[in-house]
Image 1: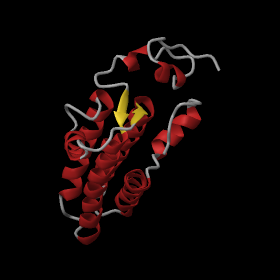
Image 2 (image 1 turned 135 degrees about the vertical axis):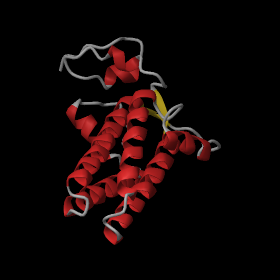
Image 3 (image 1 turned 120 degrees about the horizontal axis):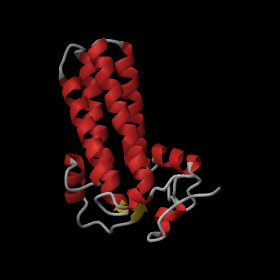
Image 4 (image 1 turned 90 degrees about the horizontal axis):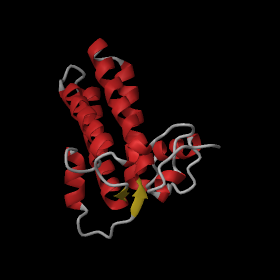
Length: 177
């Protein structure tokens, strides 16, 4: 499969998008690798927030908690996609501080950014569905999916977005552990 990439970063070249000059991805603010302990800690924080939104929605569907948390998660995911875990992602900053003393395990940034864009999409779907029908079953279904995916990443270390990325773009150096 032919790919067009910059030759400055071996991991970025191995995980490149087919037929796309993705050298702009290497110039994104933040690092070309992220620390796995910080990423899993962030996934745990996101899981707790999504769990609060889900619980709130199931117990009291008229609550604005889902609205506020989905807006926060949308902002947080977009900041993480654009700038990495720090300096503008609130959960990324907290996760980095909480995992500061843990040994960093580098992981490629492109699959994580792809996964976080999926998280932003889920937050946007929840926000949209909540605006259309605040007590609807679809809000709960999307929140359950969001909760399950963040739980898989936080607890088991399996990032579904990274797995999808590795299958779509034939990323051999993506570590999904």
